[in-house]
Length: 271
Image 1 (cartoon, rainbow, N blue to C red):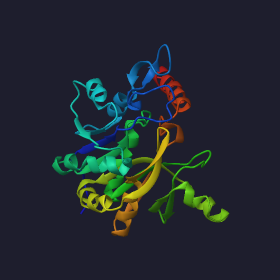
Image 2 (cartoon, rainbow, N blue to C red):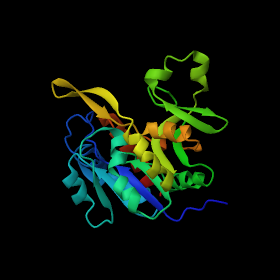
Image 3 (cartoon, helix red, strand yellow):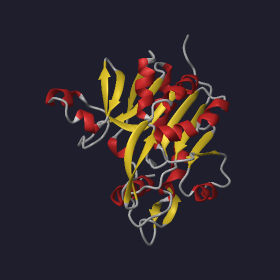
């Protein structure tokens, strides 16, 4: 039987500070796309543009750093705010969205980041369309430079797993060359399967060391990319949808912010 989704719910990860945004202490999803006196002040918060481009349907926004500021910035919009108790990775942010996912009635779910404002509505639509064939669809791009991106290991059009740079950079050259697609960190997934696999994701903590001020601490983090491997191991189908690299640029440094601001201005000027 053909699978036809009844509506689309979206989970937007907007909990992080953006530790590489030097000179800025707020939530990076509130940074402006239309800067004024500096790149850090202006109009059109990134998060509002992300929400505008998503399909119609319920929105769950995962918050932590400067949560009150995010909630105030979105006052008047219909959205559920999902508090991530500690910043324990993108997987931890998704786990914080579990109550939202268990209560919405929509069958298709988009998981996206709050700092990728240039992803177009038709790209999100293509992600959801892929759920007619697959249980989960990964948004990916072919980079000009693979740098240290996570790459998709694929076979016959199916995603096997997402492998991080610290592993794939040690592959033989011919294997590295077969890795074409980079992970954009955005997904569409069938809701019932997602809810089922959240329990498995919750049992897959990674112990990592992170710098906190002048000291290093050991914490547990959860990786959203593990969801792909878990679902694949469970026999589910993982597909891919491609987008241009410039469309999926995330804001994680001042340089990336300036680049996105320029591209946004160009898009606005072309309309």
